[in-house]
Length: 112
Image (cartoon, rainbow, N blue to C red; front, side):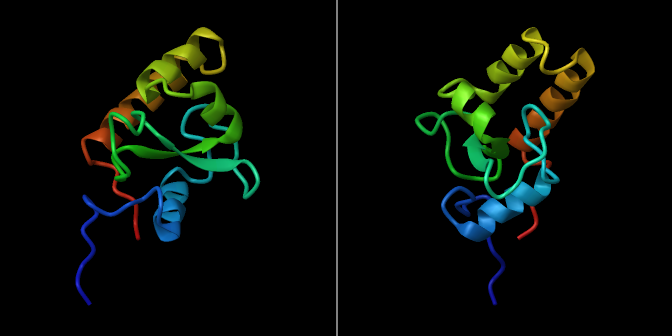
């Protein structure tokens, strides 16, 4: 069996890819850290689809609330919004921001 190319795999459209992203985020919303379940979880694009793609570098697990509120905003800007609104502490913001950067440069690969 050929090894899968994580850099081109569609983590948004493929069910196994979505599950891998949910697992990478340990069952929590990437943005607000809320616990996710089968009814409140979605895959969100860090950069809007018009600017990004469906690779693991651009997909995170999100709760429906954050996904809806974020809209076409970038993940980086949305984390700032959550911090300004007091929904993330400064420490949580720093941690999320560093993790976002690690995801985008390919250091946080999900397991398929």
